[in-house]
Image (tube, rainbow, N blue to C red):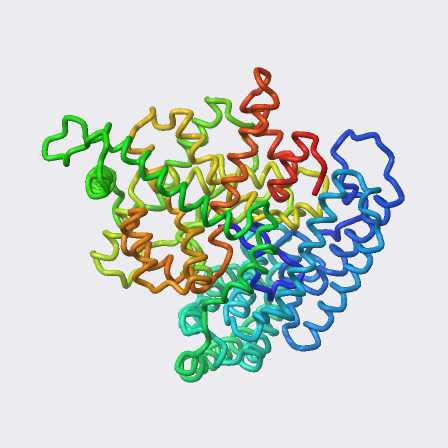
Length: 604
């Protein structure tokens, strides 16, 4: 689950899926390497707008700037007060006015795409600040910013440790004000109960992050710098305790907001978040149709798995609903039985990364980059939303590690909870997860996309492109014979894909159709075979977010559609590796733009 990168990092719109010196206008030509065509006057004007967005806009969001690799502001925090929001709104409106003054028909095709991406981004920023007003009801805006402010400085070695510790100290000195501003801005009457409870659980993770990443390195500091850091931390500990008291004593008991955003807001946010080719109605129709098809394919695989197996349920050629359900569940049980131990998940994930990397190279499916990738435990402040995510370095940070982060099983889970989790994330499912998050999914895609010459496109990577690519690669690897064509692996791949399909249905069901928890759990547990612990977590995630869950299915459908169209256009000349490299060379814009580029269609 890549993180959003927007000029105002306080916003919770999740407009994109993933995330030095100041960006410079030459990097914003937007023209592919080797292109000889001279820029038009419109291209020059747009390059100036894009450079201003990256230069002045990132100054309004220092934490996002650090995340993408612009380290000019790494001793500052975002201003989440009224004055800070006003500056963002004024800046955003001014850029939109400048874009309106540029004749889009005079732009190069690459700049036409970047202009449409930037316009969508700016419109989304205004929508979130002025219409959704997430700063007034979502406490994760503040907890997420606080954790990212420190994590972004300490997780990667983009500068010498003393410099990063000095910046961390400066940000720690400002964090008490951020927490106080949260208490001022948040209206308990608008804060949903689940959001409040999640923030209360995450609050202490900020200090854990500092104790884990900052304090061990602080031993190397000279006396004066260490004294300042210790003073900042002491003040911050008091502030975090005060904030925890407010969360537990005021926000959680009085949180009365509605987590469902409703049809009108959902449609607006869906258009801005996905920037995709499918409407809400089309997404729902395709997802429901696809769920029927996937279950049928899972039944076909179950027939193979259960054939001649003693005690297996019947697998007739034309099964009823009950027979289909029983056969799939029985086949899944065979995969669930092969699971790692409670403390073996991360180590086994490392093994799967080696296997997936070797297979991708051996089958020559796509160019494998040399950029480093490492599996880590998910930082505590980011837990509670997803079991894993890919944390790529910012587009301006070159040669730094990508992290494949996995959330450990909580220490307070009993054996039944842990077993439920491990049944879901059995050995074959962890293979699927590694394909999705790392190889050849998010990690590989991010390493390719960052090479595109448009810095703007790197900063505003499309969530549906990234998530859709990751889902696409799951099927692509299975089709290529991963794990020797093991049918139980195929069954896990299909189950994981069924989760992506269900995500899109669940998101609409919760936020538009007012689904109950019972309806949501039926979709997840019975219809798409998820374990109770996974479904419980997804139910919480569906309340905490909106439209992001749709990115997996929507992006995957666009990728599948695009491949079919390009295969048809190239005919016998179609080469799978070349196709994959061509797709990934476009810098991860919305998928429809990649399709238009590859098929030489008008940009729209």
